[in-house]
Image 1 (spheres, rainbow, N blue to C red):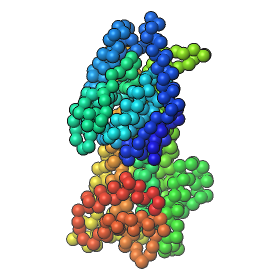
Image 2: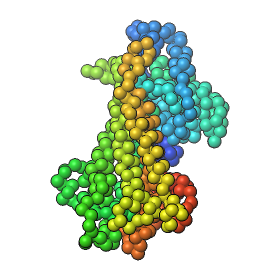
Image 3: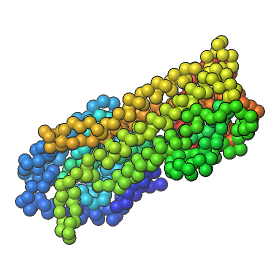
Image 4: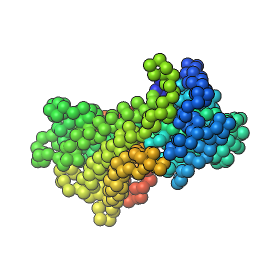
Length: 504
């Protein structure tokens, strides 16, 4: 496929295809025309004698400083150099590639006043496989993702660093090897390159895609645990969900019911089971996971809207039939920061209730479940999967800390001109770390549930659960003696990441 940039929003899939699978990008002719029209307005403004922010003035608290016309290229280049102040480990290549395509898409909507060739150079960078090296920390997520975007944009002018064909090298060298030329920026263009929410947006887009895979895997894991514990599926029936009337829980209950359809294990203890009801981690799985699913739907909606946004400042607009250059605040990251903070909370509950089900299986406290302590073949001589639950608990503890919102603490910048920031990039980074930890928690539940189901043979679980069990057993053999669980956990976590349980 080729991802085409025009006036329409990018889709989540567009972003993932370019970021992770190096799909090519092209610019539609109507986008070229739109950029040319807005550029003409900027060019005209250079001769109107007025001050226009970032076009013929300094930046931030220096906005009242007028800049001579013959210094406007230096102004834009100096902006990128001075703002490339990021620190810490570099962002993953997929994040940088996605950030660049979202930047190019925003510029192609024709409200930023840049020349079409600048957007074409960004697309050329992506298509050639030149990936700027961008430190991960430095953006406060308000006046755009300034530092990360500056590091990325430096490569366009032949500076900074980039990765090309597996090697990190100076930006100028990467351009030369890729057959590309550096570009000299004109008025407004440096600012247009860095004044946007594109880092937050790409992290949000990739997180949503990954969370959908995680959540689907969590539903499968829950179904596996229900039969592993010889629990009941009664709380999942349609009439129970109708009585509550919540969308997320109804969807989750339907998904888990589908996984268990045809289970012989459920039928084996339907009569004369002395247990009245199961622990909350099983009985309340639909409300808990459903609440998380509804939160993810909200995050997905907000990220999807951002993929159609123009988050530059100033904007080149038509207002009441007149062309105007308008200073505003579309670059502010709060519309993404709040959802991304929410996402970490949603992930925490997906992981937290999973860890409780793992604990339930390994504790062997319920004799009706028919499980040995820690699922060991010879408890005492063997410890089985005892410490896998410790690992899940450690992951959940870290996720708890990551749920403290980044967006609620404000630190002003730019001598107080930028006096209320979002810190959305930190919200995204915390959600990303939470997701990575949650994958391991769900993997541990699947590892334990797969082993527990072995103990109920020859009875079979539902068709969906059996497909998941078979997929796991292709890579992870049953536990008949103590061995390090870590490789098995990582193998299942990799399967979750790849979407292996989407169709289970």
